[in-house]
Length: 424
Image (cartoon, rainbow, N blue to C red; front, side, top):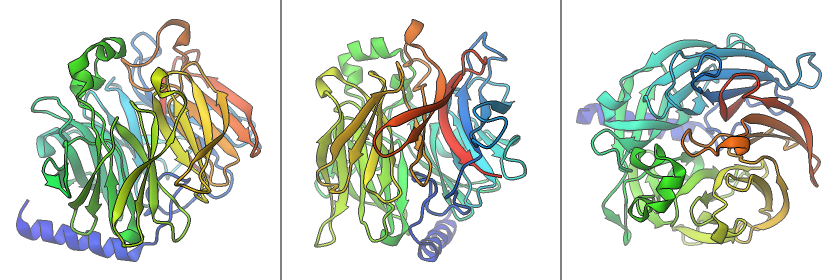
């Protein structure tokens, strides 16, 4: 990329940052997305890992009708296969919400689905295959919309299959624009490990925050074998990075031990903090600007019993920033934390929602909660514990009440992973 091209990109990002306020989709998507669903969502799209011998065995986008007024409520109404098994993982809408980008961790393919023309029947319209050739990264994980752009956070690299990775930028036409390596140098007294996982933006603060996980040499291993390998367990990320969004330049590195995963900025206007959960240490961490304007990372809470490694995975913040849902994979628990004081989160509710649970999504009003089961192909449990589902619940502020369930194994659809909402 030439210096002129890089300068043009920086200018574009700067203008985009100033043009948009800190507003978010159903509590955990990009603040640059349009067409926010504040009422009843009609469909939940589930990005699903193919299982050999189950149905066509391929990864697919499954659409479920979730409107209680529909005669198809709680039923699968459509699925579109990508005719490959590349470990479907995460996905994200473009800024206009017309297209849904989804990635395969093992085949490094990026699939673009048209969900705007007919949300009930998404269509695969493009496959992007040049991520590794253009950036050197593998394991496309996070898809995060900018105006006319898609930021893609990767998990690993093609050179040594370790955790060193970065962020790739594409335009909405699927054309590669630029790449940015995660920092390995020391900034502010903390040395970067180069690892990546999630990314999230606070436009009002010109802040891009990234977290860290591990490389393909770990996440493609059997979990039981991995846990027994002491050296391999050292190869997990222990940092978060705060970037200057306009310049796409790392500004601070925070020490956050134990693989900090999903990042959720508070959506309450005027708030200046984000929260994450560390998978291996079972802690909640707050990243916040202090009175002097300096960003700090602070451990603020514990999730379950860390000695039992419950493995917190997905989290979902409420629209008012006062509550946080946390799923823990190993014990199948869904917990709710009161964030009225983000410096001191308090668990106020817990329910076992499955034998293994991973992703959790909520409606903007917080009244509907959706949980899926699959974490990673080789980390999911076996036998009777290998439940594969989407479970929907109603939340009345005191308890989760089951609404419906889709058994993905029974339906021959595979392993249910990431979710996104759409409406007619």
